[in-house]
Length: 174
Image (tube, rainbow, N blue to C red; front, side):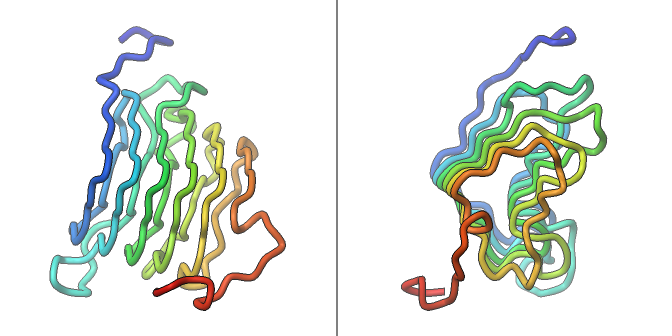
């Protein structure tokens, strides 16, 4: 499409599982369309399948940028999904550069036991994607707090915004 025009197939991933990929579970880097991921799981990515040998980045949901120019339009929505046991970050919308930013919404998602090698549970990075994080749970991502450096983030009722402590006892099973 032309500059400023969103062209898309409006792809929806609903109830999908992505696991044991040698690189990322989902990788939308440089994809210009509108994508929704809901009720999905992404786990054990970033390792050579069947081993703990490092493969690629290992991001659960790489929601990453689009091609230039940047837009504040919401192009990525992820909700009611979980990322666990990934080598890298669980949820990461960070683009390659500022000219690739896009709008991202993350609702009711859970990041658990990610960042086994690098990253964090939730990352919005430093490029200032317009991002909304609401009702997300970030727990036990190998000591890494969410990366919320961006100045363009709306945060509402996430585990990392509330004055609460989370432990294994808060879950039926971990």
